[in-house]
Image 1 (cartoon, rainbow, N blue to C red):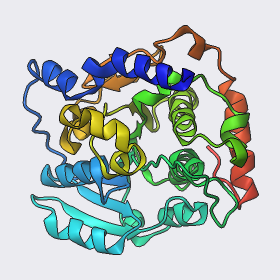
Image 2 (cartoon, rainbow, N blue to C red):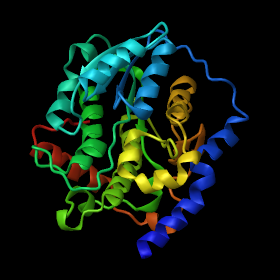
Image 3 (cartoon, one colour):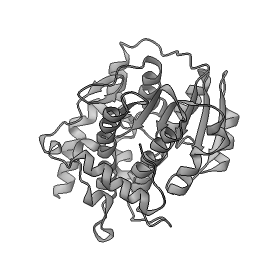
Image 4 (cartoon, rainbow, N blue to C red):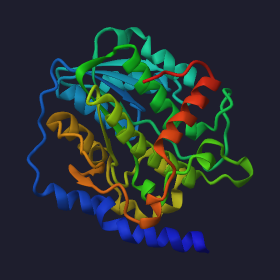
Length: 318
């Protein structure tokens, strides 16, 4: 009952902002987005569906060469066929819940063909059932957080980024419901598994890591974190059928969810000195509730993540 009431309060608070209503309201004042990404090389994870697919196709249409990473060879082939414009899609098949396959992406011919201008860490899953990969990691943790770190830091260590590269971390509005909690996130209890809580913690951690990376890397690459609002993706349909049924007419489409990612790449606003998360081309606060400020230290988070990465092979260092 308490969980249900809490969810109702959360959804009521953010409905007008995170739904298509908020997108359409803010979009009234925008100039049409028509960037020129010619000569740029992008890497987009989770590129075969939802927001990632919309980003890959739009970036290609605006002239970018896009390394599209996804698990399904068939969907990657379809993406290549569907792409239009002066750019081109370069498909890379990889299961991004497996760190060995995440790391292998760094060494692929598609990535090695030239430096990366924009990395979009989009891939993410919300799993209602507890599922451990063959590397011994909870699957959504590996996909949503550990893989993002391994790929980003692996590319940087390998010198794959241009000097003014941009990394865009795709978080979620769900992170507003939790502080940073390291132990329950990195060592989840299968007997007390809550997929929604786990997902929110991963997305909170991405916000915290964005700040840490920017402080340490000083813009090489620059890292921005955004959330797309409530988007009607296949993942939402599978993991949150009740939520989707109740709000289907108000959910955003994939292009609306992708808009801020493309805008960040086109406009390159400065990395906010005091943090923040982008929504609909506007910087929003990282916290909406006081209790979420009382989280763990991000340095401890980074140390714990590195230990996990090392436990399944040599972790990339930044």
